[in-house]
Amino acid sequence: MAITISPPPVPEYDRLELRRARSLDELPQATARVVWRKPQQGPMSALIWAPELHFISGKWYLYFAAAHSPDIADGLFQHRMFALECSAANPLTGEWVEKGRIYSHIDSFSLDATHFEHRGKHYYLWAQKDPAISGNSNLYLAEMENPWTLKGKPVLLSKPELPWEIVGFEVNEGPAVITHGQRIFISYSASATDENYCIGLLWADIDSDITDATQWHKASQPVFRTSAKNRQFGPGHNSFTLDEQGRDLLVYHARNYTEIEGDPLYDPNRHARIKPIAWDEEGMPVLGEPPADNR
Image (tube, rainbow, N blue to C red; front, side, top):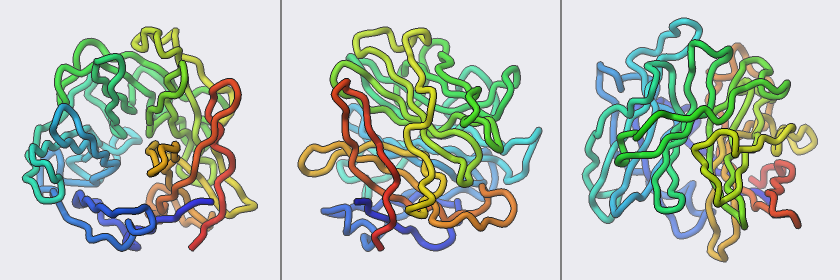
């Protein structure tokens, strides 16, 4: 079973909204509060993408990507990564303060940042283009000095090189982290944002040095992909959460059609969906098949 959460029909990519509800079923009807709007000009003035909300050391943070222009340059959008901070207990009513750009090791297209804590340290995980490497984006990991500043040199964890990672575009993006048993896992999305979009998996032993790229293993096949039977196309850019019983859930977006005119990235109707995760006897995640929409 999956729950489908449909946003307004045409996203405008110009603001960040938060909503809350007592149940997943109530989220679509919950009142959205705009906590930030893009300025008319400057580095955060276009194409607000991929927001994530995190609670870190007693404060709320919103990570997102933005560009100074909607134009394409050197074959890519011009996004960089930014952060907002809210010190109030309630992020829907508190004041949000711009903490500015999060700088990495390269000044290039970067997006899809997430945060996680592991063994008492805070880490930042994101997708970025390296001009010296073929493709659109790779996955990088760095320890954090504070919630808006990286510490040390980022580590390249994964780049698109397997056949299913390079369909349409060479992409590794949208990482998310979950731990289970004796492993830490990173899911990520690959290929163009049409029906070829899919989810891959990295994992490392939970006691290993996760900033050592050699400690990470990569699944040879996608762990979650299109189901034509269920009319679920291009599932990806997932996150993980828990239900009231403590069960792991997969949150992702997908389309229920393939008829797209032009570049699929300009088709905004990838609505959110939620489904349970299972775990096999070896402690590996079983994401299964994207179920058909239930509404």
